[in-house]
Length: 186
Image 1 (cartoon, rainbow, N blue to C red):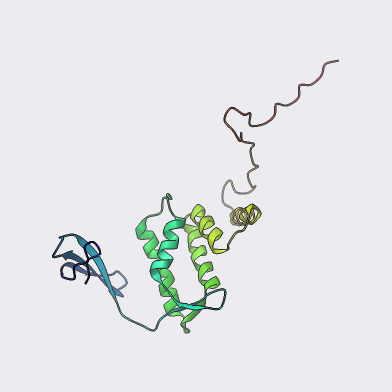
Image 2: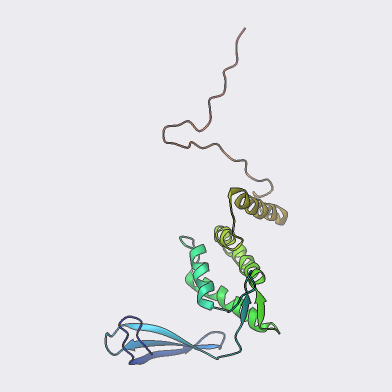
């Protein structure tokens, strides 16, 4: 296997382990040229999963592309890489269980968003903003209102009423709200 660091094609396997699901083998390798270590995975090759894009194009399911999108959505969020890997594995397993090998990108996106909603709501909104192609602020606000409405319906504490927006200063030194007028004395 080619070393991702120096490009040398000879390496030695340092460790081999089967994944928890038993569907892949994880191998730790060490390059014989630069001595750096890297990981490779072996999976059984199956019929390809095909994603039908919005414009009708078909492209093979790309596990790494999904992972990249999730990493962007979860950037600077308290979500572990292991949990994201598990989410991608779950989505891929769900795809594999389908009798047909094609799925619309919209349906796949909904699956991912459902998983993210329970994992991290900020990551959910980030992913949804790209996936649903929010054009402007009202689109974004609608998604947030929908999320808050669902929380209230689920009976989560503190979610029964949407929080009222608080005025905030736009510039340093500016008052957040104009001072209330003083009552006049007669």
